[in-house]
Image (cartoon, rainbow, N blue to C red; front, side, top):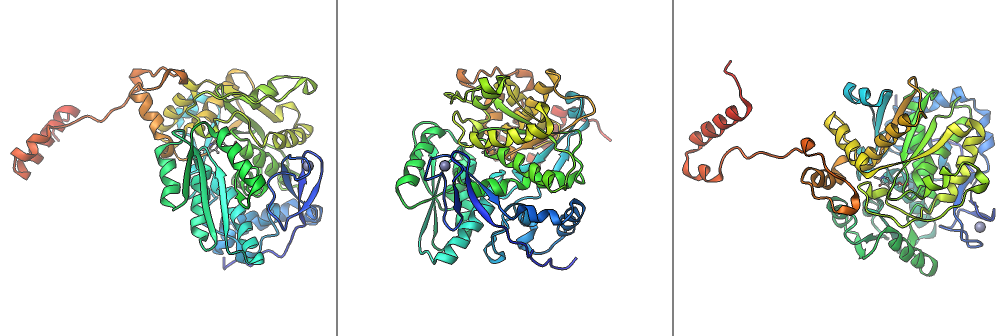
Length: 482
Ligand SMILES: *Cc1c(COP(=O)(O)O)cnc(C)c1O
Ligand SMILES: [Zn+2]
């Protein structure tokens, strides 16, 4: 198919405050409501007009667009009409985000879960986490603001558990010009890989002793009092971009999500918000006929959302932030998720359609998270610790009898395995500090073995050295001659 022409439809987007209902125009970047301080969602007042196109027609449009060679429509903007139909073609950034593969789990892993299981490898995004989906949208919007307002300087800031800053720094450095990136990280609480990413992108990297929640407070102080563009997931544009995960899941399964269970780790709760919002939009337009079930997963060491929903009677529920403890699912180690009001908002809509089974939250032990990741990866996958958390969540949901044999699970591996590889080493080397509450099973360890002493290399000719090393390998592996 030739280059797809850009869609004509334009939405009428507004910031809608979930606290007081205030409605604000999108010609400015808001993070929180100036009236009441609550969070926004972006809503399209023309959305109803999309219903003039049937669900079947929409499916056809998106399926045709899947083969486009137009950079502006190749990534998350394939689903343009559904989430940000106000951004003009010239402002869209494409760095290769979206369209991450859904990989069916290997037979050995399916045996463990007892249901059809698959990972959606969101670590195969450009900065190796799903955060790129939201940044592609937020930076495209920012790009439009810069162009329209002819700004000569924009300072973007974010607090991060590691991946938000990697993504923000990447997109900011691609855009360049007036756009500069500053990231605030909890000192010592991001992996070396995650620290290297914004440094390599040329961002200003500021470390704050404490945890993510401390960084977030500083960033909010900056956003309230100074001219900066906040890129945390309070920024509703990021939520919009992250809806693409839901659209892609639906499209991959030919828009049939009956008996599908989608597992999502919850940290700041932006991702699960976006995924529910995306599925609800498709349902509303008749693009999908069934909502998949959503399972949020949290570690026992950072589980405020689990605790909230663990109370059965909605009237008795009361949201309390928790003090987090160290977690291998470090990117989700958040005690006071900023998007909690959004989760509540969409979960209510979700439950109204699918009942209580539609949206559930489970919590899992640290031991099960790390062992979930190690098991998956030893069976051919590339799951990060948060992907391991989803895997553990699936096992937990099975144990609790929440998922029947005929259902299928899609696990969000939100980042690439390699970003969190230090935790694998800590397990293999039995180096977890006590607070993690992880006791490695030494039979699962794996270590490199030295074949030959380095001195042999200096005392041998190159040919002798090859022979000697090869002989050692033969012995170590017990090889037989052919
Ligand atoms: C940010 C992040 C999460 C948590 O997502 P939220 O939107 O904050 O709930 C989970 N996993 C990874 C790898 C992340 O980067
Ligand atoms: Zn408000």
